[in-house]
Image: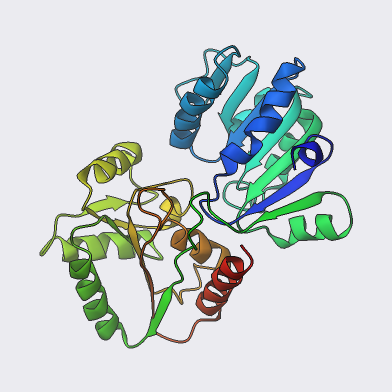
Length: 311
């Protein structure tokens, strides 16, 4: 695995929560040992800061820096962890570029960002994702990159398979209310398809429960996520802004209106993948609530089942 990663562009296709960072640590180490420069590009600022702390512990003798909003005074190091947009600062700088979630926002559909990623490296690239898009799959078929598939999480437990319920909206609301009460001793995340829907649902749920809200409009997003993590039994109403890059121990997941056109198979897979990620709590519950039959919800469920079977 490490030898292949060190010699060519690679699509590292991992199930959600497979420990992607740990999989590429050896490749990073090999590069640093040879005096090469490495970059790890990630969509979210908070994850950049968290990962910088982890990798600095792994490589205490290397200069490991974070480059993101509020951290741009120093931009040169042996190992640079940055947000995706910060790649514009570098030209032919990296012998190894690691791109996390290249199929997601802001990379998805952005020719500019893909062009910047291509010009900032002089070596090869590792693409880390649980949901590769057709562009990456085509590159694998054409032999332009290799694919490594990992369908097992580090703790060895299967990814929770979503339960799908299709019913009228008022029945779904009742079922969600019961679900929230059923897991009242655990953290719960309820994903909504729109910011307005999330805010309205949060206003309603506040009549019965304390609620955290996190959407694209939330200015204090990082603080809200940290407070939710600390509470251990909180309720978070959120949008797809939290579908990736967030790990909350023992969290249970519900997607309301999972049949919405806002969601696709990849986003549903990512949301379901928030559950059961840690060694201490490797299991979880995932519920998809739909007002009509949803091909993307069923495809997500089948994809997770197939990944578990092939682990």
